[in-house]
Length: 298
Image (cartoon, rainbow, N blue to C red):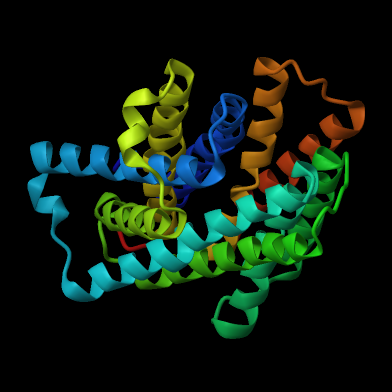
């Protein structure tokens, strides 16, 4: 894989990461149906991911734990104001909106990545990239369109806040961590995210021993499949592709979520949803095949 074209490798990394993130809804649904609260689930997810990653690296790659002070501070800020803030905003949105509307608001983040990148960086959006983004966004609306409900108007702001904060996280990660080993960065992003979530939500870690089998399995799945693997691969992809490309390719996540919902929860995909998924897929393939090359750190 090291001899693979960096752009192709980055595209594969973010595609696999997006599939991993797509399982969030599966494990989250099982956990919520078993009676877990949002705060404790988020805290347990990141705390377990941090513990597993620390154990693995200390046992097999202890030298990878070391980061200089500047990169440690950057990773800490990304973990606190990136993942911890984004996750909390998103689940506040879910609490006050229908899941469909919360998801639609969250997935405006590729739009925000492109806007911020165009105005605040040297990566200007080409006409082709803009058309792909519009096509993918249209497909997303078709894929996720369903029950729209607003129970708390402030939850709409939280939904947009989750999208904007995640867009900023993607942009800053792509620019500030180009020379950092992805798994080392992920270690500190996840660790500081776990600390921030624990301070904000005050989970009772002493109750972990009382978790049911389904709750423990859901947390393990969230920690490994939806956090360690995708977060590390996302950071790796950001070293090879433009932030705008990564943001667009991450729209594989809602396709994965819809397909897994159909396979596991037997949710019926309507013809409109299938058309939406195909439109997203076509836009992603077109953008990946014909994107302008970018510099790689390799």
